[in-house]
Length: 531
Image 1 (cartoon, rainbow, N blue to C red):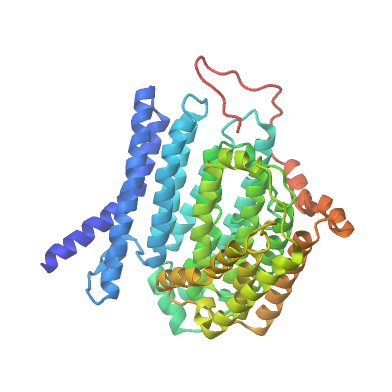
Image 2: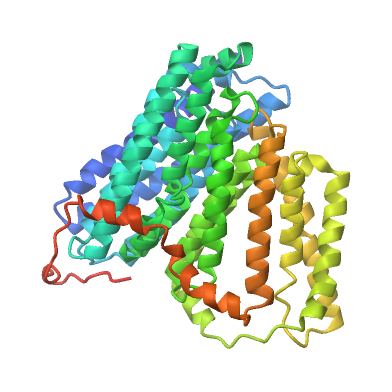
């Protein structure tokens, strides 16, 4: 029986590894497809592989649960020679990517049917999915680095799917430059960690970090890793490209916002056990992530385009995620990453329905006194619950305040004329965010080796400043939208305070962008995608 279990584990892990490799093979075959029939087979093979990845990831997760319950499967020992690192974080991310890949390929096949970009979309989309899977599965820093670069290069080809779209080309080249800065930063982080610990393999790296002190190399690596994450997650001042890639097809936008842009957060969640507590890199994430969240939230509230509002929302959410990592709340950051990816994929794929819903007449808000009479007690009650159960927010008062504010803010949008029974229902639903988060916390905390890092005085003061600024600014816009000072600043926030312009102009001066006088002609029977 033990031999059968060993064989089953080996077969499962081999399948897990072969899926991204097979995706690369199918990508090459689809690029050479000479007929619509062979291209259709490539679409079907891609969907089958991502669905297989979903099933295999569920099976790996089941084996991890068996290990946790005292039924040894030998999973970590078998995975080591294959170059895999099948822990809870890898399984959650694998489930996310394989689910998104299955849905996205199914949507894109019909969406791009007959489009002139269809033949270029499929191979590069499969390369992106395969690279993300390798990044998540691997236990080797060099393989992780190669997959990181592979994701960026493949995504560049998707963003430039239509060469006649000058603005799309400009945005893609801005991202290309930002990505190369991130690549250099990640290479520096990997080199510094190797110089300190003498290994590229994650198990040995974590063991060495736990056994010895950090040193200057680890502090420097944390800063380099923070720069890499800030570049990948489109944080200020290198965020302008994210807002301008909306000319890419909707499936590309969904893939970018749901499965790629959050990889900076994943790499931090993968490598944070190397760092002893909060480092200089953590402080950089708090400062830049918090400031980006402030600017992006305020800018999002001024947008009239659904896609632009979604892009600014992504920028803000990535800022919040990095802020949470910066203050050491890793479980919350993982929950944020997974929830944002699913929400944003649905938002982009259903953006047409969102536009139709936005055309409906909005109900006026209830009087401010009535809204505050519900919001303030709800926030206070949520804060009391979190004070009694501090592990839910990683013993971090900043995150307790953030969750309490989220509970209260959900009631600030209550429309006028809401009956007492419905007001009570809204109150209960708002408080339901606390047990809902408790459930997510209990599911995700075992996936990480340490749920949180103790909050230092510097991190606490910096985080409080960022959070207070966000609350004051968002509160002013929400509660006093007609005030003169709010209207005056609304114009500047609609342009993101112009923070992206210096970097954009620098890239424009060197980017190889062609000024197309007219769109490329379509072959007979093909259509163009102008989402």
